[in-house]
Length: 433
Ligand SMILES: Cc1cc2nc3c(=O)[nH]c(=O)nc-3n(C[C@H](O)[C@H](O)[C@H](O)COP(=O)(O)OP(=O)(O)OC[C@H]3O[C@@H](n4cnc5c(N)ncnc54)[C@H](O)[C@@H]3O)c2cc1C
Image 1 (cartoon, helix red, strand yellow):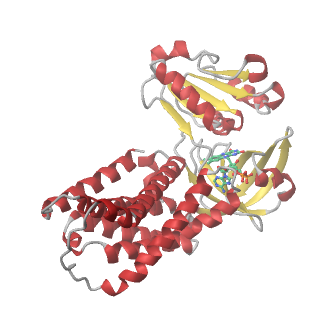
Image 2 (cartoon, helix red, strand yellow):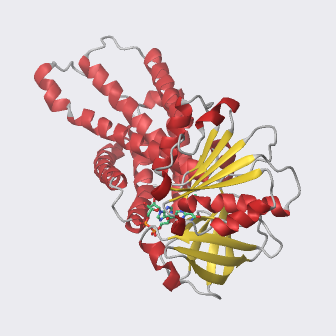
């Protein structure tokens, strides 16, 4: 979230500059209202520019952000903050009539002319409509029960809203800003965001990373899991632990799944998919061997670290075992140092541990990797204490977690309280919304 902090600080600094350049004669309530409208508008718009850039999944931003899953987290929180600033911006604009009751409005001098002034009325109206739309979007985003597949289509409308708001910002920005850092920020956000909006609306996101693939096999695993093996055509390279978006022809849009296998000569990718919602529940009936699918990726930075100086702790919650399956497979086939690690596979019951046998076979050839299976029905909810991680904190291991968000949050908090260094807890975000 550092990037959001930087954006906010940069906007505050640029606003400070603009005030410094034209200091007010009287810092009255009306001056504050105008400046806060300007500041909240810029904060909202520049954050929206960032959101648009992140939405097109630029590969060059993956490393600095730590993976596409983390980029989407920043996208989500920047979105929530941008909409909050937009609501504040609009609320301050509406506050005019109430303020008149308490504060006398000083007579205003003439506004400097700007060649786009003829658009002021329409872009103000469009700005108002956009704020209502953004407010509605915020509500359905926070309401996690709103169906994801409908949310995705509604979410696309935001690219159009961004272009409207770019026009709103350019036309209504004080003309003096165009010679100041505020103008530079608005200009960069408008151009970068609009280019990305066009890419999103024309369906070009991820096109250069999309490969055709054919399904080799579809096998049920237990009651709620499916193993899908695909053969990808073209030049495909992935690191163990990365994920890809899978899209089957004629079905709803693409869904992200971790590639549960290491790179191999046959370009075959294995996905282990759990029924977690409507689409994944329908997959066993939808997919069959021989079907064509498209695979976009690979993405993510949840990559195996072959560092043998520091002990590692790997924790998988249920289907979060998939990146570790790929890591273990890679350690069998690719020569190189094997880290000292304990893999905790946390499941509800022994019946849910559908990957136990395969994990045991993979770990059997790797003496420095210890497998521990934790069944909550017998041993209670997995916690740092229950997994016996608290004693390990003294040696400052690197902890890698993949699984449900709640479990990740509680383990991270337990370990931080016990003294685990900041940055030693790495996790894959299994949720993008
Ligand atoms: C990086 C990453 C790796 C993942 N790896 C695996 C894996 O190896 N195996 C596995 O079983 N699951 C994995 N998931 C989760 C999987 O993507 C969701 O379970 C699946 O998309 C749910 O779709 P649904 O329509 O069945 O469920 P819904 O009920 O529609 O959605 C449940 C939740 O899944 C997420 N989701 C749904 N559709 C999408 C989408 N198109 N794009 C992004 N997120 C979506 C949303 O957070 C949503 O709230 C992974 C998710 C991410 C982000």
